[in-house]
Image (cartoon, rainbow, N blue to C red; front, side, top):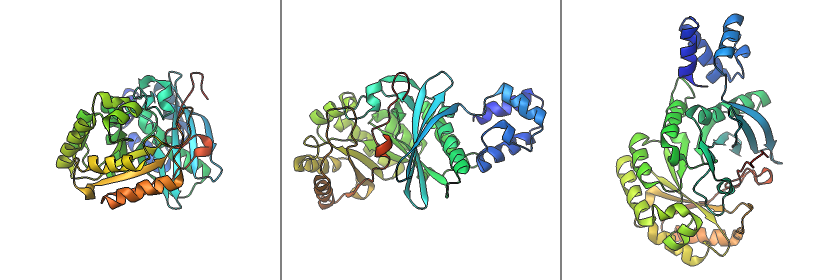
Length: 345
């Protein structure tokens, strides 16, 4: 829902301003799913609004649920016929997180990521980005799922900093206390390394978490795995991150997908420790290790033991490091598995 569009529609229809307050409370407080569900509005007003402005910019096509019930993946139809995927995750009994998309497809083309196989179709609008969160709040209410969705990660389809303006607008909506009301520190934005936008992000959103999709700490290897490294190599990325830390003084999270025999060797861990030393203080750098989730690519996942050995080398180097929990593998909803085929899945 686009608040500005709704308020404009109310004005065009000659409806009093207090109607927006009723709509706001119903949509963001009660997670209603349609204009008809806002009972405090007169029937004529509901009908007029339904004709003038769509309630949502996305429509559910299908939701898949993992066997353990801790991951839910939705395929959402957009108004132009495109489809986007988003995931709802329950990492613990009390926490719900949604992984949202910022683009239909992705142009970065990381070699291990299913989304990269799609190429880029277009960027999402701010409304299409935030409506993914609204969809999951409605879904949780409809399914009577306990708890509250108050963690958002921009780690779905697309490169968020390739559509910075749309992402920035969506962030402002998510943190708006009169709309979604999500705390800035409960939101994370991941980038493959668009250096200039990293600097801008630190100034625009110093309290929102930054994650870097790194995956290698030498230029030849990173260029092969993450082609964006050709434009912003590791030296340029380190400079941008130093500037980011200077303006925000916030911790940076590094995402590192472990690929068997490619970037999971002891020398790869040592290279990562060495490169991180060029970025900033150790206490502000955290490495998230991700065991590769199988996609239609030639890569293979590292062994669990090798993942733990990699983590030990990071810890020995003085850097906090975790091996991320992979949820939703059985529904192709884990990190790097989101993809929509040309005719839909």
